[in-house]
Image (tube, rainbow, N blue to C red; front, side, top):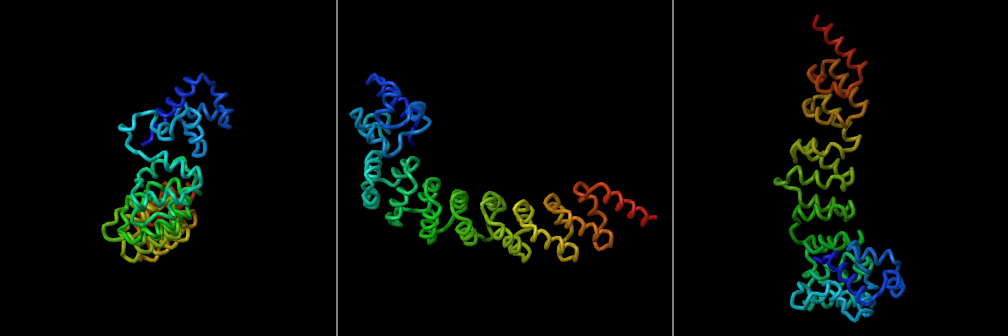
Length: 307
């Protein structure tokens, strides 16, 4: 992995060896002196178009810069500079060909991805063979690819087994449609609640609602509903309340959903208790979520019935 702080220190050394100020170097590279300062602090790297220019200015190779001047034999990757230079010259097909033939390792493409524009990376990845672009590679490239590009790559890789750590890694970057498809393909009896909870913020409410429906049909454990409660639509929550009131769902199961129920749904449950369709014990569980006036009225009514 590229060490930005080490690279920054090397950039600073090269500049000082040439007796240049940050402002003078910035003028020669047509960038701001703030950009040079960020490079030297290790906060960022020169962009892919500037790196070759910077290397030429100091009589170095791009690989020299990216490896902070380390000797060739100490370098984990030998072709980072080649990838950068080809992309800088708008030759993505050359990069793809080198990766496909094994001349350049796909790991090296992953290494330079953070400072390659998404449009340029798209041009490279669309030319890569599926045998090279496996799901684990796609997952590591995900933060740097456009959503549409990533969706296409995931679609191509769906022939292989989809594992949950890959879905979790891809969730923030793929479209909700693609994520929903991956989830649907991967749901089986071994699915753990925490798997879905991790990706729930990235799923559309419609898909979360469909998962709740699977619970209602007996396909998934009720624990899924409890854990997914913050992401369930009001309509589905209302339907669950109706099923509690009509006796289809055990009233105890609704208690954990109480913080997410609106006033209308709480009133349905209260009415169920008052009509003696639901146990008075439910009132105690719902009490923290019921307004004081309604709670006082119900307690009074219950006490009167006891008398």
